[in-house]
Amino acid sequence: MTPSLDRRRFLGSLAPLAVAPSLARGAAAPRAQDAAAAADDEGSIGKTPHTRFAINAEMWGGGMPFLRRIEESARLGFPAVEFWPYEGKDLAAIRETCVKHSIAIAQFTAWGFSPGMNDPAHHDAFEKKIREAVQVAKQLHCDKMTVVGGNDRKGISQEEMHEQIEKALKRVKPIVEDAGVMLILEPMNIRVDHKGHCLYGSVDAVRICRAVASPMVKINWDLYHMQISEGDLCGRLRDGFDQVGYLQLADHPGRNEPGTGEIHFPRVLKQAYELGYRGFVGTECHPSSGFVASARAVAAADRW
Image 1 (tube, rainbow, N blue to C red):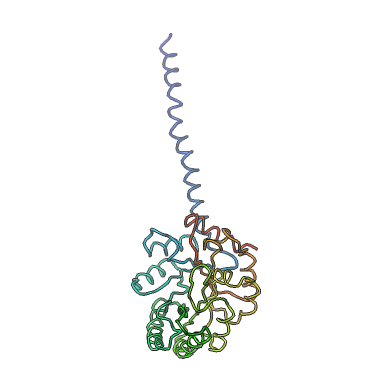
Image 2 (image 1 turned 90 degrees about the vertical axis):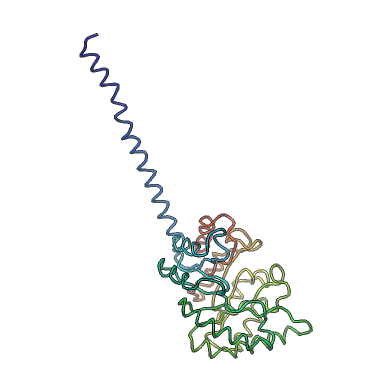
């Protein structure tokens, strides 16, 4: 074999080695593009055309630090978060995180189950707490706060307890009207989650709020609780829509994201939209499929 032939064969054997790195780079580029596309797709999950969902930062993101839950909600494109009691939380850090990631706080809990405002002995404390919570709302740039009626009182009729809830709300009505912060009274359900609670279903809550007669005292209309308590979600929404201050959702049974239970949320949310609701809808549900997959299920409830 001649030297020139040996040289040609040697150079030819090197050619595949020279091409291999470029092929590897070419394979890596689509993978990087796919990852970027997936990230872009996830960032639009919460940008739904009709319904503005608020991720519940208490029930979503188990295992994540609280502020990280807010960041993840923003990363997925959701416009707001909600949470439960403000006590014990770093309010300045929450506000800073929300501003940094351009996400709102839809509502938080100002007064919980106990002590109940269905007892006149607690009305002084209720007023004091609402005055404090109004300042928290202003700090957080939030305009809605949930309040809860209270659990049953032994020997006291439901009618009497509801009367005391009404009186408590009337007492703080000037405070929230002056502040421009809405109190949203939440009826629960007693069949599954809150046995012994004194206020459930829409009928009594609507009657109480109509009696209070304030644009700043309305209902936190949790569709999960309403489904369990009374059903007929669209019809009840129509009947009491003048007193709807806020909507929340979870499917039933299970209290998980839409699509896991019996409620056809696209129809119910369409009804709310057609009635004129444009506020946030809180996702007070347990994600059953992880943060991202459950977020997609929430977004799917807005397709009609």
